[in-house]
Length: 219
Image: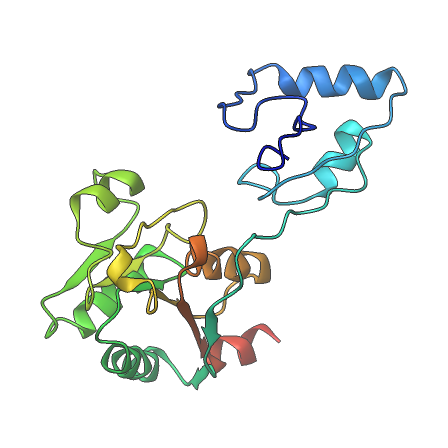
């Protein structure tokens, strides 16, 4: 609209930062209690609102479209590995690191013990970052203090699968981040983990490693 000399049809200036106050949830509830119809629109449901039923139960919002990215998806989804036990999973992870040696790799594990096990298995690679819940650094501090986005660096983490933004340098625009999910994970958690790559128009790769022993035990 601005390029054509017309007034933009925005209720707020889209260039400005819009902050929602802490009482926004109470304000939404008031609208709902008065019988007002509310529709939601989000780019991400966020940590607290992973279950979209929260919107309907609290605010009567039963239609929450998620805005698509304005850039084409450049993600390559590779065939998963189906393994029997942690040793085979470690071999699969080692193969992935060799195939993507020119890219940073974020390998997401279900818990801290898995992170420590796979870190030990990859000890021959000096460019491994181990990120667990029991270290003193927050996720953002780890990202700022470590070379997570450097090519060839492997980050094993039990907590970076959601809400973590890893900025890539422009030199990696056509390569991007490799996201590996290790072990059986809840579907929504896996979906969130995959969203760490392919951001801002960058290319990216996804590969899953399943533990068939765990799947057999569960089902």
